[in-house]
Image (tube, rainbow, N blue to C red; front, side, top):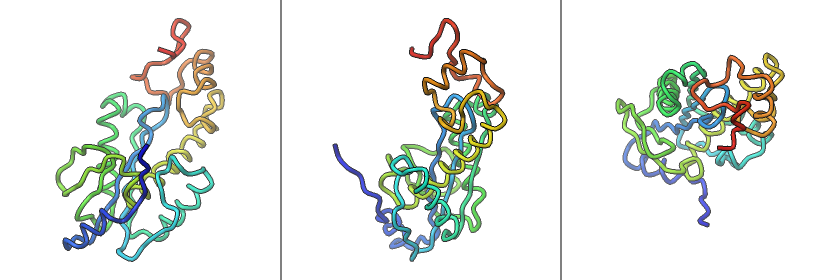
Length: 208
């Protein structure tokens, strides 16, 4: 298996072409059964390097929280886009993820000149962009955005756990773990569950 390493190669290529304001963009929360989808966009100055920034999935919660604080304090700009479960149901999860990224980019000040997008595609063409498959494991700015998005969403789900304590959101963050599926069978969906996602019932244990 090929191991990816986060580098500044994408940023250096763009800066060598005279592009200074570069935003990395990523989203989290496509797969869960409950809660929002969250995207983040981050712009760094050319001299900013934060040791340890990596794909958020590879980092412990404590390490993500530490890096989140450093990213927010050292970045030139950070934008976050959040779409609710109702918006996900209305749009579908793919379109909601795209819109969350667009909202994150729109909240950046200064505005970026170029975007580095995690994944193969992006809808909004008002700003030039480069899609990077597995970008959160390859590109520094995208990896930083993945950390901001992940920590933001995890904190939202922990807050929602206090409102809906029967489901264990603080532990699984809305993903379809056995404990979460068991709670759904017992209590039914909460107001923050995604109605357009398949939920387990008495005849559906969620395994299909």
